[in-house]
Image 1 (cartoon, rainbow, N blue to C red):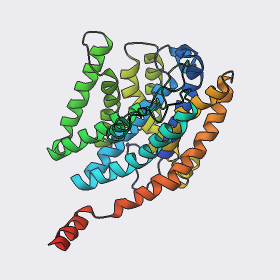
Image 2 (image 1 turned 90 degrees about the vertical axis):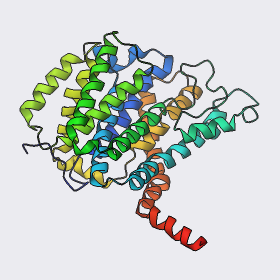
Image 3 (image 1 turned 45 degrees about the horizontal axis):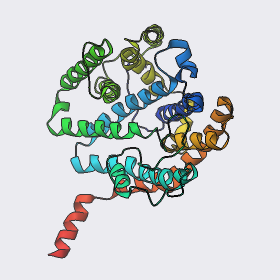
Image 4 (image 1 turned 135 degrees about the horizontal axis):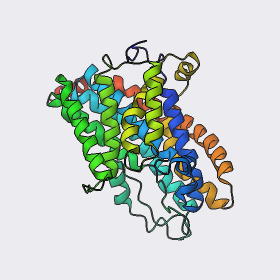
Length: 352
């Protein structure tokens, strides 16, 4: 295969495999850090002193998402259908995980006898609406990162990227893909200025994640023009390895050279990896429940080794991810076939 091209068949790529890998990498990355708050104990951080496996995984999620979400809009540029798909994919599992975190994990991790009476229910509703980490009374006191679900912060940023695609699509930016490329270059430039401390940004986390998302979108829009071969992949691998040693360049190199390697793996037909698409996509659920599961293990077994924590949390979160998929995500996704416009017209005509 000489060009970067996604098969029309959802079973002919390795996207599900990569999503699962990224979800598990987040668990492995958090295990040593949650134990004592020392970020330097994380394996990739020890090697490069820049990005952790968790940051690489989250960046990978956003790269894949940028590719797939831009693909979704260009395939069906309909505002209602686009929003319906995004809401059904993100909100149901997020809401359930937030409720579980707030009303099951929270009480288990609180030393207060007034947990429920001091609960700010309006705050929880607001966090559900805006895809924020669930608000709770104090939990996990005396431990590093005493929050009930510290992984959820990325979800709201991902949904904001979806909304950017929607806005750009409505105003017709995808009709001229050079505009998307120019915006991506501008975002990367601002990120570079921020890393060089030449520009202060109020929300550098969103800037970083958006840069990955935009780069992923570029790989879709220019999929027919990007050379896809082993030699280029090797060169990008070398560039990524060198770039990860630089505090200033690591994120920029990951957004570009890392993106090429990611899509090289994602779009190369590999029979064994392709077969993973036949299994439930446990990545979202595993990601949502990873933090509270690991915090609970450490709360009740504070001397647990990071490696044992990683193993137990991986097994637990794969199971929880499967439960989330079968009971929440898959049933919600079936609603994508519902024609909202037709339903609304029927409701209006019935009232008339």
